[in-house]
Amino acid sequence: MLKADATNWLLEEENPSVRYYTLKDILDKPGPDPEVQQAKRDVMRYDIVPNILHKQREPEYLKTYPKFYTNKYKGLVWQLIVLAEMGAEANSQIIEQCEYLLNNSQETEDGGFAMNTAAKKGGGRITEVIPCLTGNMVWILIHFGYLDDPRLQKAINWLTRYTRFNDGVEDNPQTPPYDRYEMCWGKHTCFMGVIKALKGLCAVPQEKRTRDISDTINKAVEFLLVHSIFKRSQDLSKISKPGWLKLSFPLMYQTDVLEILDILTELGVADDRMNDAIHIVLSKQDDTGRWRAENTSNTDRLLIPLDQKGEQSKWITLRAMRVIKRYR
Image 1 (cartoon, helix red, strand yellow):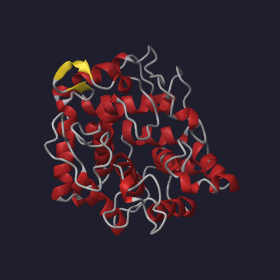
Image 2 (tube, one colour):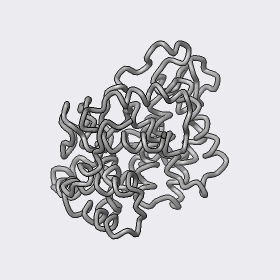
Image 3 (tube, one colour):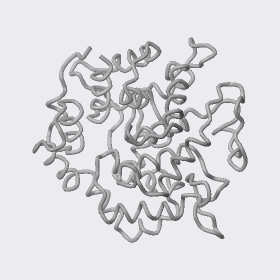
Image 4 (cartoon, helix red, strand yellow):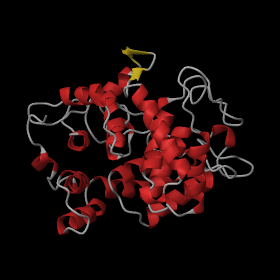
């Protein structure tokens, strides 16, 4: 299935994050392995992660904290996504940022995360709680060690209670006050909300998943499979989201076929309804066994730009190789 083996390219030391995940996910080296441990340490010492953390300590950046979501894609939410994707470990600076979001983005009663802070009572503004942000924040906070924090558990409960799977018919209408955004819920639930909710819930270790978590995961998986990942369920000859066929990294509230396949295969899902998406990913491989960045509308606007459009991407190649390895 691979035209060439790009593993040695991914193992180059200039990108310690890619090297770390390649050792773990492609070569199956265990966590205590000395190479894995060294790569993990290097993530915090070299390249993207320390550069982001340095820029975030600048006084001008600290002033942008209140625009944690609306400052796309330099705001706190988006940078924490990048740091988590890079495999950064929680340090005092990252914990301070997580606490800021828990205090200013998380809605105090139900636990979902909002785009802005409630001016009078603090916490997230309840009318601006959205599922994609909540799913992303659950994933971020689990990565940085908050799994057993009651505030994180509240956000997980929000996802299991309020995630919807309407597919052209509003079988399960959203309840107030979360019914404000038609694009998130309505007759057809927003794909991105489902995917980011799934991403967050999948980060919960299997032994700690409640029945509600498992049920929501199963419903989300079937919702994606009914659509063959990127198609219209009522007419599978039509593409629902053409933009999802252009591969990118990192993905913020958006997604693409490769991210969805990465989530599904991590869960151990292997279903014929994934085959067309798999074939699309394979078709984008070049003769060197590498994949290129096709959409950089997110990455161009980060604190530290990542992939250049049209260039070979170690991150996308890593994700593609991981998906193919699991799906065989």
